[in-house]
Length: 116
Image 1 (cartoon, rainbow, N blue to C red):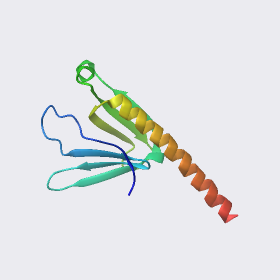
Image 2 (spheres, one colour):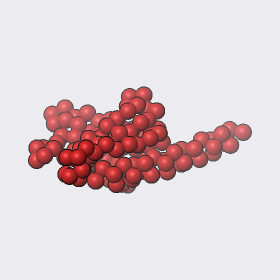
Image 3 (cartoon, rainbow, N blue to C red):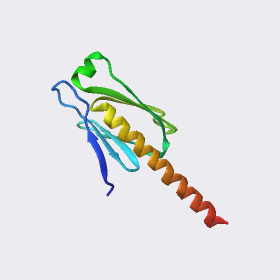
Image 4 (cartoon, one colour):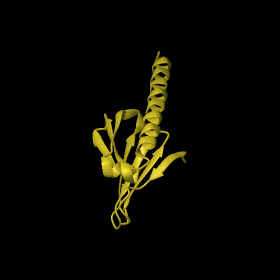
């Protein structure tokens, strides 16, 4: 079981949300749906950039959107919408992605060295 760094749901102005985001040290998991559940994941080492967008109303409500740009074939650009504390979550996500990339590179170097 992976350690969970952050979990959240989109802010829906009091309406129920059937989307859940989970950030671990190696991936972000997106679960959607009520009767039929769909689950996607993006490996953090694939994330190349993270950006946020908050308009005036979103800033007043303390929410915002986080856009992930990745090398993932299924999700090259993915938007996490209406997240509370979006700046802090985006910073956490960017740092976790950087750490994951460093671990992934170290594993690749180790594999190459073992092949020699």
